[in-house]
Length: 185
Image: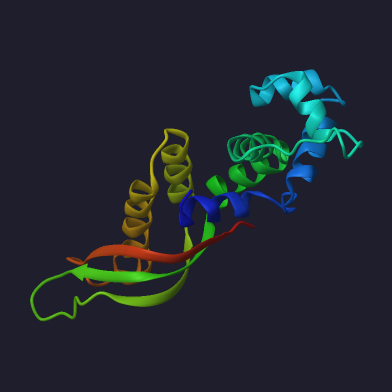
């Protein structure tokens, strides 16, 4: 998961996700009303394996392996605050969002301009159309590169060309994203 994807995920949540694997398992069990069978089905393991992970007896307890830990994290991410996520996504698509980033920006511009790439801190309001395009790309399985192109086009129009008032031939290259954060509402 890249910086942009992580920033989108953080913006859609109002509470942080539990950090430990034990807390993840407790959350999944609570979500499935204590059924180790349902949690096992979600994770693609046997019911007995889930029982070994969550038992209170230390001599019978077996920690999940790295692949299972990743599956547990993904299951928790998919189930964490679904209504809040839907509401915040709808709000971003309707009202837009504020994008905060530190990244390298370069330009393809007419002769005589300074087009050398350099690192910039940028905070910019972006409209709901950009949010819709980002979420649609993410839902379609777009990678970090495609999301970067969407944001570069939006930042080029909003920040560098001031919504079409100047620098009409300027094309923005957006790379080396150090962080990407989104503020909704």
